[in-house]
Length: 145
Image (cartoon, rainbow, N blue to C red):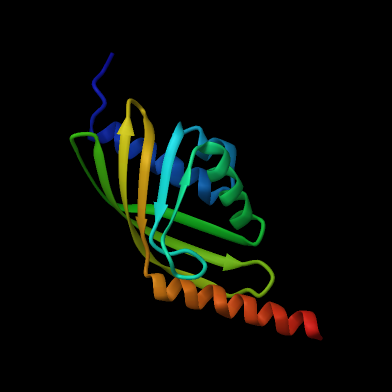
């Protein structure tokens, strides 16, 4: 069997982002280990959060897909000693308000075999929090009409 190398690691990450961009949550989850750890520095309130395991990650991802369409693509990737470091371009459009968030974020991806065991995402936390506050505010205005 061929050794898991930088090319294969990039292919796994690119496939994951392609699945996300198509809204294919189950396909996306197939690239993760069952006990995956997902950490992000930018929650809805701007605070970091952690999700452990595929069931929790599935719930989280479905909650995003239910309110927004999103596309992501790996722009830069480096792999060494089982860890990938990536710069990812992202586009999010909130379905109800039409508001758009675009930019880039960093990922540190730890692989176990051919699966992703841990992912750490570093977003512009202030920008993310402002986007979701704007969406919430505009939804409230729409509901009041």
